[in-house]
Length: 592
Image (cartoon, rainbow, N blue to C red):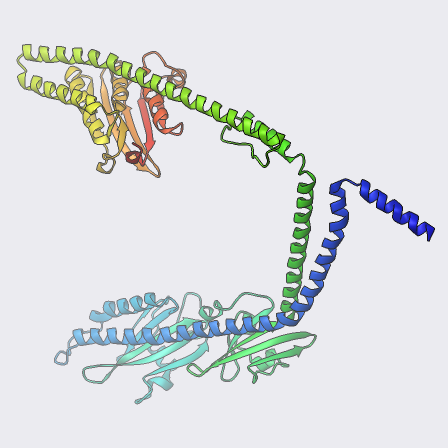
């Protein structure tokens, strides 16, 4: 008794001295394990009792769906035959009126072929269709070769020699060589006698074929499930197991009783659940044999799922135990994590305040400090934006007087030389150019105005450099309603003229094109001038390269307006020309 008391005392002392985390583990872990084992045992009992019933119901539901699908194919054949028969009757009424016996079958062959093709396309399960008139002329759809009328008459003589009802007949699935199909599959055949609606005579016979795979493809693919269609003699005419085709069900499954609709039957050492459904319309029987090994496998899968859930529950419990054990140090850890995120440059974080203790006050002060820093950064960014706007305005102020002086000088020369018409055109272009440049003070204008602006610029420059400059503009109308920063294309065109064509002995052409691609608009300015060498090309957009300030400025403006993913891309080959591609947002009209 004393030893037991000492052991209890020692265990009690050891438990009291444990860290809180260890206490939770010692108490809760055994309870969790017991709970998981209890769930596993109970679930096995439940699944063992109810899973068989559930699987039976699943098979029955599946059988009902398959039967409906098979009947749908059957009904499609009937519908297709009726539609085709009406179309054939209409063709014969049109081409073979009662008072005209001189029309040949050749004149209606194409029309009949079109009818067969159309109706077969309307019903994809119809693999092939054949029409044979009473004179032995045939036309087909879906076959490699048109069947010979003598072969058809020899194969289906029993039906073709009938003079009265029935007007149509379904033939069981068999291999019929008379229908020379691409796949050479057994076919389910419908024969329909087509009667003239005008005089009641037989016009011919329609043969519709559905290949056996159209039925077997409906069956689920499973090693533990066998689906069959048997005719009234219990001969298997379709199955997901091709080795069973055209065998008798009693021979393939001698221990199964096919007279029962639903039964659990043992074959050798394996239990099967057999279900059958009969269809009076086509005199078929749909049969399924499901091995109970499949059901046992399903039970084990469910047991495995329960085990996984139990293990996941244990893992979650351990996680919460860990969280509880770290509860005291968590506020400091949160603050440390926040500092680490800020060190990466992410200022859109805050330290959670979960109490009014010292750590809560520290977190509150830290959040206020981060807010102040963010406000300062926003203020600095706004100042930088204003600074760049001033720089852009200054650049425009530098460009406009220079261009104006040259344009006025050109107009003066044209007037002095008596070219008054050309002087008038140039003056009008100059006026329109400055009207669009001002744009009512707007920094963003529609693309159509920017194109008009650059076209006026090109017209003036062409008048100045008529011997070295030609141009064309090809931008789809669908792009012209989008917005673009003012003075975007003109610097690119100016660069193409002064640094591309002007340096070339025989001049060249400037091309402006546009396209829409996914979520962006692409505008391209191309010239066939002297081009730009490789190293110089790399430096143009990386810094304010001498002579290419316009390109650098346009690139920076686009990135400032829309982000780093947009801007200018330059490609060039010395001696061949330069292509400047401008990438803008597709939804540009909604940004301002």
